[in-house]
Image (cartoon, rainbow, N blue to C red; front, side):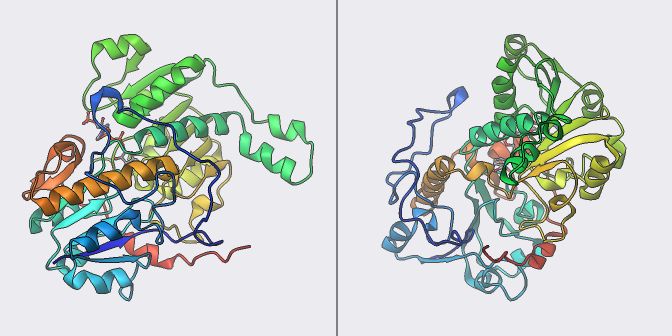
Length: 403
Ligand code: NDP
């Protein structure tokens, strides 16, 4: 029987919810492009409940224990004395969410001789050293599409929030003020602005589609060009290089995976190619950006605003410069873990586990690494190598005491 270690974020500081703001979730029939929603044989959770925190257990306990497996659920993931590190010795499967990633570095994979499957309950498996997984024959899978639209909605919200100066204006209200001039001295309309996405995959294209009705000029750069019909429908401008796109955009959004080719794609040099006063929104991965270069660009005015929900490492230490840099609209990593998204990726995780234990193939669209090489969607969107370097810094985070 297998040991499954599931690393999830902590419950709310007020305790696991006993009631919710809404009674149901809207019904979604499928994803754009025809991919089907997760199709597990059964689920043991109530859609719309908090599944991604420790007590939610992704709704997996009854299913796994009914098969005689051992399920260990913990949030204690960083450092050599962490529960994760101890459980690795005999873990066959490690499940983790990108919001609270169980970094599976080469060193940790070496400490897990029985590890066969690293399962991402969400999208983005850069917290696994993919090279080490390939070398050791560990399968890596993620729940493609489960939260792509959740993130696209978040990107649109953050673009509007930055350009219209929403968060500082909201702060004035909370402070008891009525400081209109303070609020609007940095507030613009997005109408007529040029917005460009690095990558027009599931999220990037959904962002472009959602911004079209705002009458923005839409740009993208990607390794593979979109079909002509889509370019025509959205009146898209394609750029062969990122830098060429940066030069003409008022707003740039990053929507590509983190892999060795994309790590630190936004750095001191590439920021020089941005228009002065551009806005940058990154909900893809923190390490796509050089964090100190971002802070300096906000201080100098090269960037007028930066927002996103992804950091490196996660959780970000209290002294991470993105917590205190000017004109930022950062949140913890939340865009892909709305209650709506959790329902989909918990079901997708169950589907993958059912396939694994029943000896059925995992969908190609969920596979990142298999049989010692990049596979399925991973072979299309990732490059080989490792992007986990520096993740041990996550140990420096100290959980905030509730106010
Ligand atoms: P997709 O696989 O649909 O899209 C990724 C796109 O990135 C593909 O179009 C791919 O291009 C493109 N790409 C890869 N490498 C490059 C590169 N070097 N330059 C330009 N484009 C590149 O994934 P999603 O859109 O669903 O997700 C994208 C990323 O967003 C995830 O990998 C993850 O890191 C992040 N994410 C964040 C979440 C959050 O909660 N904040 C939740 C979900 C995802 P091509 O296929 O043409 O090679």
